[in-house]
Amino acid sequence: MIKHIVMWKLKEQAEGADRATNAREMKRRLDECATVVPGILTFEVTLAQPDLEATYDVVLYSEFADRAALEGYIKHPTHQAVVPFIGAIREGRQCMDYEV
Image 1 (cartoon, one colour):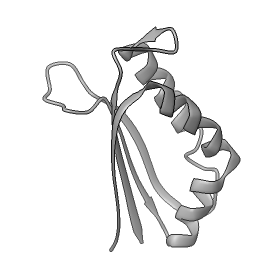
Image 2 (cartoon, rainbow, N blue to C red):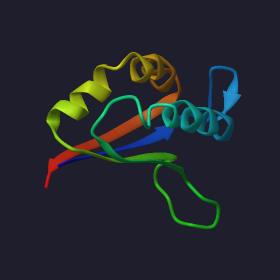
Image 3 (cartoon, rainbow, N blue to C red):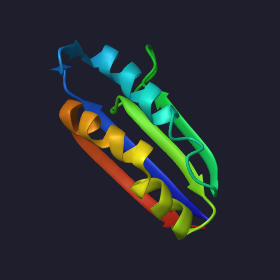
Image 4 (cartoon, rainbow, N blue to C red):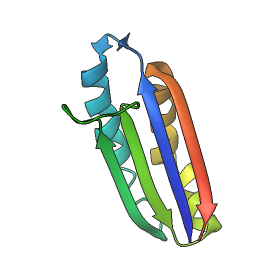
């Protein structure tokens, strides 16, 4: 199994919207990727919550059956369609993939 964790810090303003609006839109778009390929075992997109400490605005926690499933997700057109939007609104990104 491969765990794929990504965290994004968003710009204050981008694409004509504020950080909170873009975070919600990013979550909506990423949520559409939750079942795009076989082998996605877990797919959670969460936003920083008020009154809880957070250094990033959006986090994706996902688990894939194997590397092939992760690669299928990364290359899938639904995921690829989200990439330009995220690139336009993000200030920073951290990612870690690891096998368990």
